[in-house]
Amino acid sequence: MAESNRRRATRRAVRRLIVSVVKSTALAVKVTRSAGVVAIAAMVATPLFVQGAVERRWLAYVVVIGFFVAATAASWLVHDVRAVWAAVVVMTVSLAVEVVGSRTGIPFGDYEYGSALQPKLLGVPLLVAVAWTMITLVVYGMYEHTRLSLVGRTIAGACSITAWDVFLDPQMVAEGYWTWQQRGASFRGIPLVNYGGWFMTAVVMLVLVHMVMTVATGHRAAQQHHDVMQAEHIARSLASLMYLVISVLSTIGFLLFFADVIVALVGAFAMGSCWTLSRVAAVRRVVS
Image 1 (tube, rainbow, N blue to C red):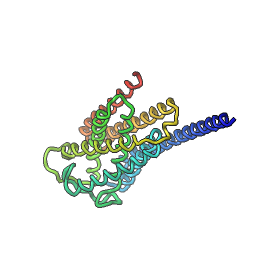
Image 2: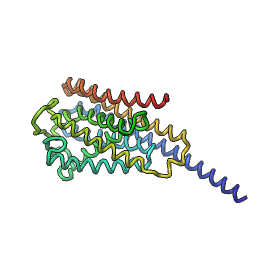
Image 3: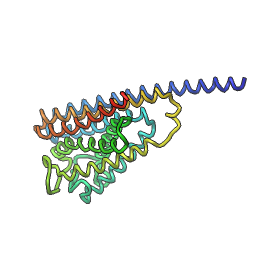
Image 4: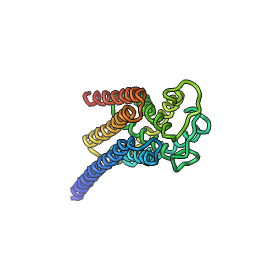
């Protein structure tokens, strides 16, 4: 009799856990979609205002924070609270890197932040750290659970994060959010050393995220294998979609509104290649 009661109690506990997971998954998907739509709307609206206008500055906050919330929620599907801890770690470390970088020129080159983006901490706009966290979580999710090895995912992910800066830096410099004093070879006024700094920093960020995300918790182990696989697929698809949307809208922006075809073409090729690689790696994992 006691054994039978224990079995019934176990089955009820498992059913409650499954229901909780389903509700959590549905909520995370809704948050990702809603925040993503808001961010997309802000990206579309940005060119409607004059360069340097206060409206563009506020829209920049909406874009970055919107995609940050969407990326964190998508990551929550697979990693639960670890997604939040990963975000905290990346935000903290990226802020530290930017503080060092803006004061010493290492690893990005010689640059200086303007006064437009507020608030600041130790001279660095907090929005910059949020942006680093957003793109890191998007890219990590895009390559997670693919056929690539950990080293392969890290290298491909670092390239994908750096590819985003092909669009980001020229636009932000044009808005007056920061300026470059670095001499030497450059791309559209952005020192090439900056992209090397981005790659190295991105590697560190992705490794840190991997370390946080792989910390064992008992929650996921209790789920059915099918549920875990489904959550992984949804999370990866959402991250991949966010990266694709950012690349497409950035390309359109530079082609039609920011008057720089070179940045549009190079950025589209860089981000498009990285996105294609992630999709090929994901398809091969499904097929195998």
